[in-house]
Amino acid sequence: MAKKNLVSLVVPVHNEMNAIDLFIEKLHAVIAVLKQKYRFELVFVNDGSTDATERLIMGYARKLPWISLINLSRNFGKEAALSAGIKHAKGDAVIPMDVDLQDPPEVIEQMLIHWQSGAKIVNACRASRDQDSRLKRISAAAFYKIFNLLADRPIPSGVGDFRLLDREVVNAILTIGERSRFNKGLFSWVGFETVEISYERPARSSGETHWSYWKLWKLACDGIFASTTMPLRIWTYIGLIMTLVSIMYSGFLFFRTLIFGVDVPGYTSTVILILIFGGMNMFALGIIGEYVGRIYIEVRKRPLYIVRSVYQHSETET
Image (cartoon, rainbow, N blue to C red):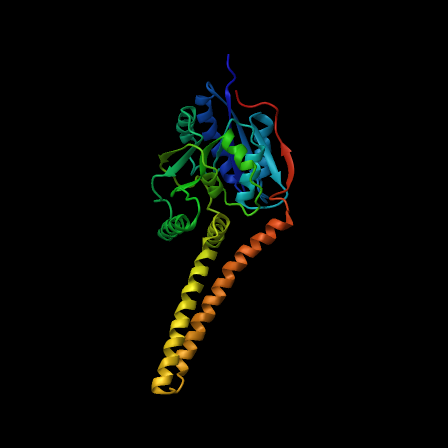
């Protein structure tokens, strides 16, 4: 009898103690149906939780051999926690997902069907964002449009971290050593045959999202600056255009002065020009600073995360 393929489910958690029980209950029901064809491992990554999340997961891990727990030394952020989980996953296929059940476990079966048909990446695309606020829907749509306009490699709109990655894809991702991580961009950048499925994203099973608008803004900036140098190139073009305009305007002023004489300088126009060019210079320097900051992060070569402890059985769900 051929050995069953191993499927790794990677779940980063940070202060999610209220969601653990229901998540494992729902996931276990799905796995019970699929375990005739596949083996499973559930890899929790505790991203510096300060509540009872670690203790609760450890209780399950001691009883269920297919559950393992990676504890990071502090909160490093979801991108780092997800990277840690992917690195420790042993599966022939790896599926990152959230613990709040907004990534429904029932979709896993569809992903596996497409994977068995030859797809290396199976993206789960939200059919709608009705559960999000109007502001979040507008800002998310704007981010995807801006990102795909600027980025060297576009990312599919409406697709989060919830997707299936073949082992070949995972191995390719693990060769990427950059520390300013934007996993959605990396998943798209590596290529491979990709299939997209649609699903309805339900409301959170418990609690509230940890993603404030400020954190989402920082993630959007990290995504754009980590995926393209187009913002720098744009300012090169703007500088060139402004230089040409300045030369032409200088020539106009020179010949007008020769013909009509010297006008009394205008205070308002001078102040406006100073403010406009000063603001543009500061904005351009800010963009350069974003890239310089990321260069600084890369050259220090600090690890993306630090693992405090790992608890796992040698067995998986059969």
